[in-house]
Image 1 (tube, rainbow, N blue to C red):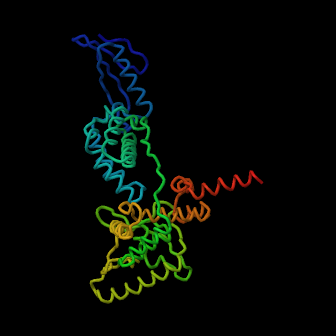
Image 2: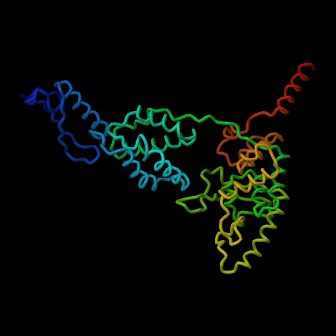
Image 3: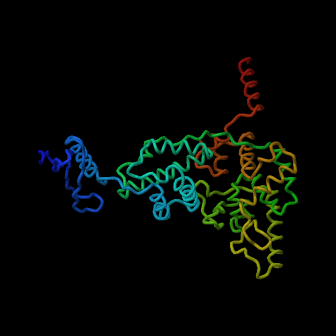
Length: 383
């Protein structure tokens, strides 16, 4: 028996087993094709509700039903297509792809179907991730999942992104750990015999990131103007080290050089010319990098870390085991601020996209500064 139909409701009939069947026709908003679809329910009202949901979804430009693909299947497809053609930097694409393979295409969320994926499922996944990984890693994995599901919405596989209803995992921003200028000098002394002493000195005097230091070319150095230009960073992409542009416009910057750094770079340039002559046709320094191996190969950011740590251990500085290239960057920033350099100038030197980042990382007050402030206030009140 056919039931009465409202506008765009479709037809509803009673089945031999006492349940109800509804049929609805619509134009698929994704393909533009005419489609007939059946829905079933225990009551006629349940069928009407399902037909109404289909009509609402189609009217809103969404697919009538979500796809049955698993999260792993879709995310792999998104990683191999949409991610690759996006405008993200090569290093970001590499990080997103790694997050897909490690955190989403495996584990508790991988076999979940897109049409059954709920915000609660994603919250459970976040909880599981927090048990296994650091907060920054979990936040990145969530960001990638949400981007991939946005792609599924765009392609008409799902009507809404369930990740959009889950708050982005928070990461507590800790103040950066730094060394005093005295301890930085001790680290430099400890690195003095290293082939890569110049790279350590560069970090200590300029606050460059380690990838920026390893990505420095001779053409980026102007000895006349006594400055260097940050134009590339050395990154690991698809298992190979490549020169890539910095992620932000503010990271592309010019940085003044000290007399001590200039003299060391000149010594490195002379030594490198001699090594190139000795190597002959075995020389592989096609990019004319400042810091290279004896045959001209890249000196990588990964290899810079043990150089700094070994120098710190040798010099017996505090927490030497945890000292690395970024410690020298933090130390430079802290020293500049404590010397009274304006925070905007420090942000420019560090290549931060805003002074808010600089303030969050380095805007702490030392005990000496705090004591000076209190004493100055007391003196002003007495006057």
